Length: 118
Image (cartoon, rainbow, N blue to C red; front, top):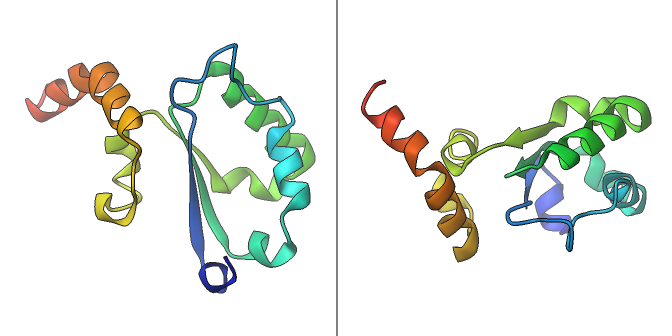
């Protein structure tokens, strides 16, 4: 990753289809932040958290508010892929098929409403 992180970069985490049986620990971000070398932290422009749950939003809020407040403005909760594509061009990222299927199924009414101008 050294060749990627020498300049600004973004990370995308897909929280899609996460439930009680496979959710992240509440201190996942803290653990991740603690093991990542400072050179990677320095050039992180944004961390996109796609398809967050209420629990993951609360966890990231607590972490970025009380543990690493400087990270707060870099963490973005993204509800759907269209929102992600306003930040990252679709051709810049490989999205797993199950994420595409989920987003289409859950957000297709949103996309229909948006495209019709309502």
